Structures are given as C-alpha cells and as structure tokens.
Length: 371
Image (cartoon, rainbow, N blue to C red; front, side, top):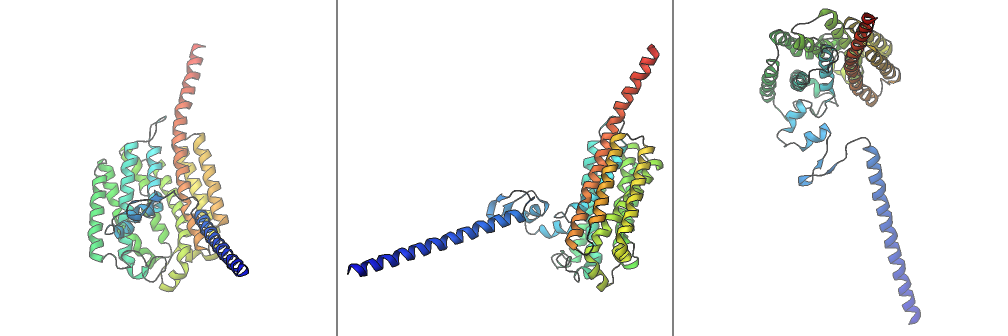
C-alpha cells in the first residue's frame, strides 16, 4: 500500500513538474515573440491601448487607421497615411519662402503654415486625379491594387466630388496670397491634371512630375515679394526638378516589372542598369543650380555647408541603392525628406548669418571713419 501510495505521489509530482515546464516554455515563447515584435517595430512611435481596443500612435498610418471607418478610404486616397509625398511637395515652397526673407530674419511662419495646408490639399487632389486616371492600371499592380478606387472602396463619382472639395479648399488657400501669386498658382493646375497621363506617352513622366511638384519654388518667392526674381527662382526651380528626377526614378524602380507588363513608361525603365550614372548627373546639376541660387541671393557659409551635406547624402543614396530591391528603393526615396530639410535649414541659417555679417561690416566701417 505504501509503495502504491509513493508511486502515485511520484506520478503526481512528475505531472505538476511537466505542467510547470510547459507553462514556462509558453511564457518564454510569449516573451520572445514580444521581443521580436519590439525589434521589428524599432523606431516606430510608442503605442498604448485606446478606446474600443484600438492602438493609439502618432504615425500618419495609425492616425488614418484610428479615423472613423467611412472616412478612411478618402484619407488613404489623399495618401495621408503616407506623408512623404506631401513633404516632397512642400519643401521647395519652404526653400523659396526662406530665401525671400529679409537678411537676419526667419521665414514668414504664416506663409509656411499656409503653404503647408496647401501642400496637403494639392497633394491629395493630385493623388485623387492620378488614381482616377490609373484605376485600371492600379488593379494590375500588386503595390497599388488596394488603393481605394482600384479596390472599389470609392466610386469614380465619389472621388470626383471629393476632388472638387479639395480643389475648393486649395483655392481658398491660394486666395490668401497676392494677385500675382494667385495667377501663378492657378497656372499649375494644367500640370496637376495632365501629369498622370504622361506615363502612357513618354519615358520621362518624372520630368513632368518635377515641373509640377516644384512649382512652389516659384510661388513661395512671389508670395513674399509680389513677383518672381528669375535670377533666384529659375535656378531654384531647376534644382527642384533635378531632385525630383533623382527620387522619383528611385521610386519607379519599385514597379518596373509590373510597369513593363502593363505598358507603363518611366525613367526607371528608360535608364535600366545605367540608372546610377544618370542619377549622378542629376545630382551634380541640382547642386550646381543650388550654388547659383546661393550666389544670386547673397547666401553665406551655413548655406554652402548645407549643400555639402546634401551632396554627401545624395552620393550615399545613389551609390548604395540596390535598384532590384523594392524595399531599398522605398527607403532611399523616403530619405529625401532629409535632403529637403537640410537645404531649408541651410537657407535659414545662411540668412541669419547675413545679419551677423552685416553688423560686422558696419562695425568695420564705423571704426575706419573714427580712425
């Protein structure tokens, strides 16, 4: 009896031990998965549980995901979940506004905010027009098949009405500017409407995108000064076009296989394996034009230091990119926000340096008069 009782106790202990070990393994696996998820989300904003079990985050995609469901397709149609395009449209505006500021002064914050609002609206309108034109193409490309119009979440009529709303709000922003700028801004609408068609016609749609996306380089200056100074605005506009040819060619390499199948053209297909030499040429042209802008606007050392940093950034982009890896193309494309911000910072600091330089000059002149 004692031996039977001991055997039962032993079996019970073994069962408890095995259950505990199994539980430990489950806990370890859970911790490992959590650690892995943490590593995968490294660099993303911290999240915390929100109402109705949703996660709250400061990322643009999370903000769109947390919006009311009926609104989400429209926000995605505007690409509010992918704000890099808005940045690339907005930054040339900031360059121009900052260059037009008086020596020693910061750029006009009211105009920067006004142009920021306009960039969100016009980028949204441009994406809506693009998706309306391209809905049949988008259905055939894996990366774009889930866009709201292509996926059937928004009808063509609904998107047309939404486009009208965006353009009406953008017109309200434009009417806050002087008459010269209103006329100049309205002139860009033809480019906005026709750009999506260019990929059907030419291997250089990125050039037309550059003409469209960098219109703010002209508009920002005129909003401050009342008209454009060709010696500053034209080389600034040209530098922006060269920049667009760089980043959008990189972007187009993501879709080159699908584009070949459906008959869509791009500079990525035009350049092929010679992409890097072409991008290098565009980079040199961009830096040369920005240097001319600096000379014609009397820029100072911080500006040219920023151009050196921009050159290094572009060189790293171009010579390390793997054009056959879509994820690397996306990362290099998205890094161009940094390029634009460096240029803006260089202009602002260079403008502030002008005041310092002017003060020193006045002191030297005063001392010479006293002597």
